[in-house]
Length: 392
Ligand SMILES: Cc1cc2nc3c(=O)[nH]c(=O)nc-3n(C[C@H](O)[C@H](O)[C@H](O)COP(=O)(O)OP(=O)(O)OC[C@H]3O[C@@H](n4cnc5c(N)ncnc54)[C@H](O)[C@@H]3O)c2cc1C
Image (cartoon, rainbow, N blue to C red):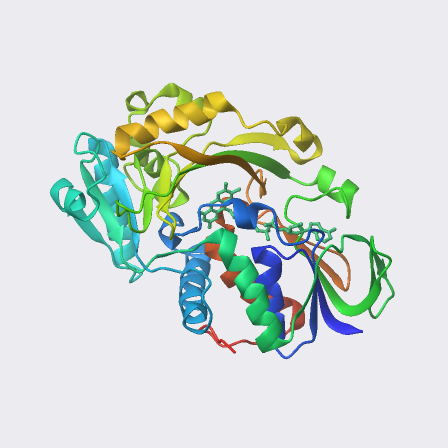
């Protein structure tokens, strides 16, 4: 018998486990694969609280940034503090950067407006023909998703005694009144006082009818990475004009409605493309992404093909922004995540008293999951954790 069982070892499950263990609970995490293979390892690794308007999710992002940095001092999870730069291409995007700075100044989240010249000095791979101005958040960090979650699991096993059980697809959770019984495809049965389901986009195994009816949609994203380019330096999270047109923090700004849509390639709108870059530790540059959508019940229709046509559009846009010594790609892949279609920012449900489902955090998990998980654990377990990140 454990206190808390978590289903899913992505970033959401891992940080729920972490905060439950900090609250003194005995925790077990079930993962269906040999290691997490989903959204948590397929993403950019940009930790960008500036992408959320001031409020709950921005606060979660700030907490996560601090927590990641504290964890990095104890265990190498690949966190680097090189900041985030938003590059404006058009006059109206540049105006939005000024408004964003004012919005964040008001909540004590500092940033620096940079001229094109200053940007070219710090990021010489940016094309002078593209950049008009930029907004730099020095406090933001980048992660290495393919490294982080694994290193974190090992660290949490050692320091907080959390048990991670891989190749253990949970196929049934039975309500026993005061506790639940969890059964895996390997025939294991574990009883827990509380079960938290953080199963990402995998709706088929648990509560399928519930998910089919939920206001959730699936998103498919196209990503690519260049071969290592150690000879260039592209520090931090690079976000561009198309991002300024897409991220939540810009949408409520006074001039957002005045953005001129004719300044962007219509194909970027058709395929939900906004161009982001992040240089990995090995020097390769991750480039993305596009967004295609389907209702949760129809999510298989998104298919599994990597759409070369979409990848080519991303690449053409990217080549207008950066000058790289080589655009030779090392890999292309699809990522998927679930997100809410309307209103709510995340899916939460308690089908029976001891089972809590939480998923569909959408495109914000690497930035916000840690902060959200802390609050959710406090709510579920009725505990109060320290305001500032605590590390074992
Ligand atoms: C291409 C791409 C780029 C992104 N870029 C960023 C970014 O730069 N910054 C950012 O903040 N966010 C980004 N995101 C979003 C972020 O990656 C997600 O929000 C986050 O990873 C979701 O985490 P999760 O734990 O909910 O889901 P997942 O990572 O999908 O984890 C769920 C886990 O549950 C397991 N599981 C499911 N069902 C069962 C079961 N029955 N039994 C056992 N295990 C089960 C799965 O195997 C999986 O490992 C991006 C996402 C994508 C796809």
